[in-house]
Image (cartoon, rainbow, N blue to C red; front, top):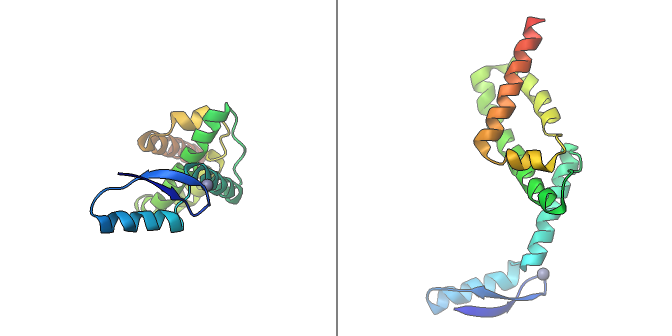
Length: 144
Ligand SMILES: [Zn+2]
């Protein structure tokens, strides 16, 4: 059933609740205490993405407003996911490559094209491209 509620941000909205009266009550209470309305939720996410970009020293993205907004969330997601993989990569490929990769990835993350990030939104595409380029550069450096 649909219920009108006041979110924790003070805005009103409608949510859909299912189940027993008890469960519905719990969900309503949760949304009223902690939930944000869709607009405030979007704002909050944007704020997180901005803070994230600052922390990593990422550039402002170029593209249409819609592309940028989409690409910013892709960028944050991909960088966080890749950082989580780093220990496994270090284990598999060794410290030398891991150190090289850290620096390489920092530069790689600085791509400021929104459409590029959208093109690389699939995890496998992103990881394959990043690792492929890093390995090629690493080998070229060895050859010198
Ligand atoms: Zn709100």
